[in-house]
Length: 214
Ligand code: SAH
Figure 1 (spheres, rainbow, N blue to C red):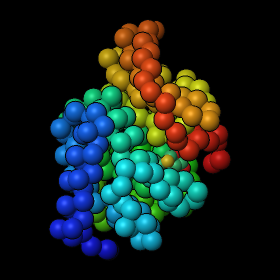
Figure 2 (cartoon, rainbow, N blue to C red; figure 1 turned 180 degrees about the vertical axis):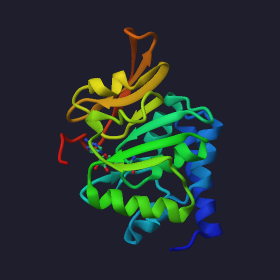
Figure 3 (spheres, rainbow, N blue to C red; figure 1 turned 90 degrees about the vertical axis):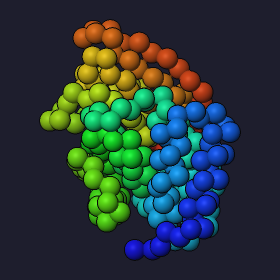
């Protein structure tokens, strides 16, 4: 395993300060950014850039999301300790680690086999214990473990998948970037068995949520 040094830790403090400057107020989210060694979630050739507020390529043509995007999405999600959280798109595992830092019981799925295997091993080495890391199709959610208090989709969804709505608890929140070329960050709150309230935030850019491959 590569190292986490004082220098890396210092850079994370600066990154958290930058993300705060851009408008993130949730101290717990900022603390997670300060705590997580982002450089280890990336290929060593990008290590020098790990604490810039940018997305970077990871395996299987995917990306590790921009820290501001992760922070924004997590802030809107409003996670409390012990919440059952479903994440669609494990990717590098960075967002998974943020959710673990917040004390969530994390269930995460990834559809690229290579990434799924790599990240599962990596997160356990780092000491982040998700409740479930699976290889699967996010459009279907995770019916065996539903319902969830929170659902976070970390890839751009052309539409809101119905199974995800049905796997959300009443009183639960889902944050999903919706759109094709660019995405509108969308919050869905489940008010009752049949009522969902939608709030739209700014534009973001994600890699696409891809249709079934498994
Ligand atoms: N949360 C990740 C973001 C990775 S990018 C991180 O912090 O690094 C989005 C991820 O969603 C990619 O790894 C991609 O392979 C995955 N993905 C795309 N379509 C998917 C689907 N239908 N089901 C599950 N994961 C999907």
